[in-house]
Length: 147
Image 1 (cartoon, helix red, strand yellow):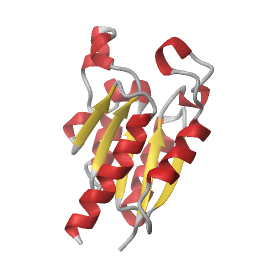
Image 2 (cartoon, helix red, strand yellow):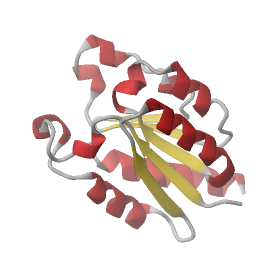
Image 3 (cartoon, helix red, strand yellow):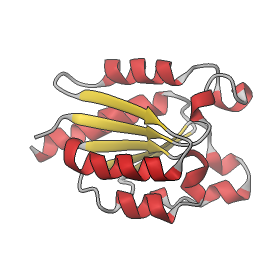
Image 4 (cartoon, helix red, strand yellow):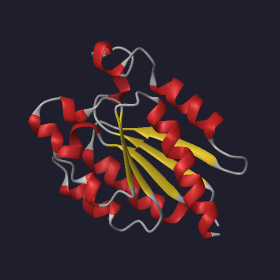
């Protein structure tokens, strides 16, 4: 059984640490990846990817069906717009955790709706980048319990 956890990040998250630090903080995706590797239990691997392109995220979700035991996803703005990402997530059989750095419920009303949540086994919002680490631990626990 695969012990690879795929962490996918959508548009503008490549600018984490530089874009709106008053909302998203000063840490970068590199920090997220380092922290997730440290949070992953022994025997689990992390693959973190980011794209500003919806189709690339869909392709990576299709790949994860064959390679990964779980997915943590921060789809960025696609969270609120992408039926294509939802459809791709629905083809994945393992646990899916939706992650948002900010508390989307304290922001603009259009951010209150998530297509990703329709598939997610859990949602983590407003915990900053620590939400990614929590997602990794939760996925690992679900996978270990199912083994």
